[in-house]
Image (cartoon, rainbow, N blue to C red; front, top):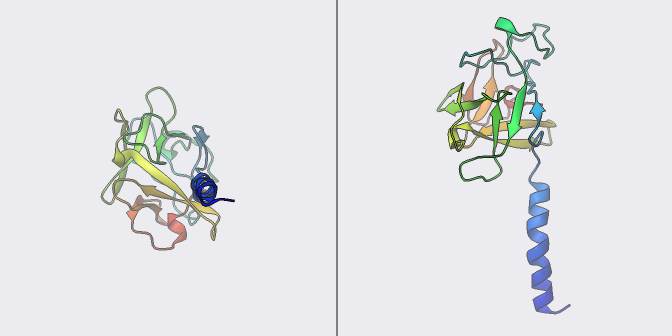
Length: 167
């Protein structure tokens, strides 16, 4: 193989190999639920409220859609209409009036999705092979979605903690 053809081969193979090893999204343009690996409850929201939560550890909700004050659990993974797309996703509530999961500094909430979806509303779904779960990293803050044992959801720097892992 000549140097020119070897260089062309490597130029074609390396990007494919890097893409294949970078991990994949939990779902591609599909409905998902996110179960926290410490509380074993789903990421929830309710109606027009802007807050998100999981239920306290030890409650046996098993990620069922309970509605009302106990919240809905269905999210829509969407990577269309993003500001400067780079592999991030928007976590939206389903439906035509879907709202986006948003992080600002240490706080997580829902807001009407921007057009295009801005960095505060974009999330990287980083696969953690050790825990066999995803870390949800906000594009703007570079912090991770975290749930505590009381059901509160916020942002934190990566701490190698199951409270920051989602399936």
